[in-house]
Figure 1 (cartoon, rainbow, N blue to C red):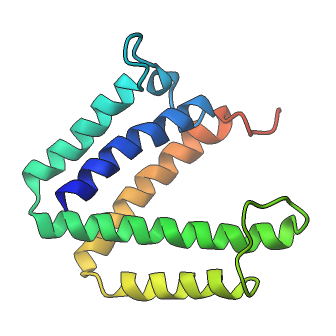
Figure 2 (figure 1 turned 180 degrees about the horizontal axis):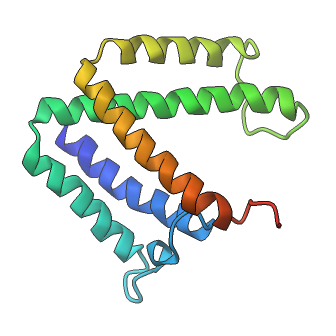
Figure 3 (figure 1 turned 90 degrees about the vertical axis):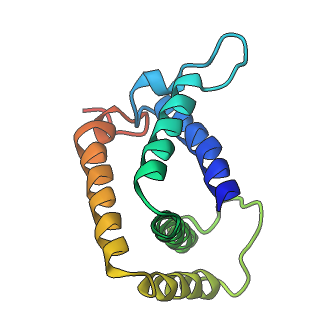
Length: 151
């Protein structure tokens, strides 16, 4: 579990860095350390975001939150594969998922089944975190993204 949280922390700072470069988060998240060439601010924020809950919750709670977040990310990616297959069937792909949309659809189903086995309190915490993320997206990110349509 410790190695998973450490990898999450390092990966999360890079995700925030990329989101910031796309305009989805404030530009401070894409600042790079002049000597080490790493996203320093994002790394510090990710460290605090990991450290505070680590001091407040037991390892089982953190594992459940990590599991539901990861499974939900897999669901979104699987749905994205299905949507792209139908919206842009001629797009060049690095690999092709066998059996068309069947495998991604099974992935969505099995991820939801695994998520259904998690405690209800984990779902409440996940929904609160999801609402916070959607709030940030709709009131900040959607209008500042480089992919936003010009008005």
